[in-house]
Image (tube, rainbow, N blue to C red; front, side, top):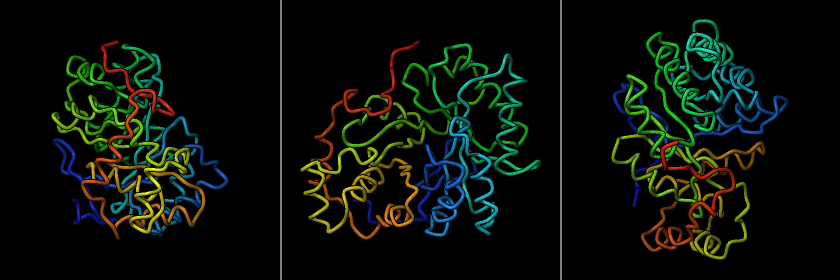
Length: 285
């Protein structure tokens, strides 16, 4: 299997000179009071990729953590997302610019900026994508991508934008929700797949198959789930505000899942029914 993986492993992004760290630190529902400490802990543990969003309301705290960490900005990879557009491309661009300012100051940049969801409708998707393209042209954003996009939504970008393919599609992924059609589309089109909820918010901690594999490798169920994503070539984004768990979730390079392990985990797929947040809709909308 993927024996050459390490905490410093990266993946190339389509039509980009930049690379994305293959494990990221998620901050969804990390309140401002703890977000700074959690991010600093993650950076100290070796994470170099932090994933936030306008919707999470903690971009300012992530920016502070980046500065407090004393790690060079160029060594860190920061992702954020836009959920809803303004009334036009320019006002939407202003929202993107505001996020960049919160995260990296007046003259800063964001490594990756995503459309958070396709759910606001076709015109909203167009406004957000074209505003992201403008931000990329202006050097505010290095790469742009999407989240929760199905096949139809990704195809739509060919008609509404100049940048193709999107660098990334961030979707819910774990053994119970494998979203194989969207993942295969991304693979064929050189779109990096990011996995949110890779540890299923601990809802599967008692699963018999998962625990059997964890016991076999003398590791934890969560570590198996994160390693599973890495073996798949995805970018997992585990989230925790507990320092010990933050560190443990990055300690997934001392073992490998063999073919039997991967097959057993693949066999847990429940399709859309396995989603705890949102399975993508692959039909055009």
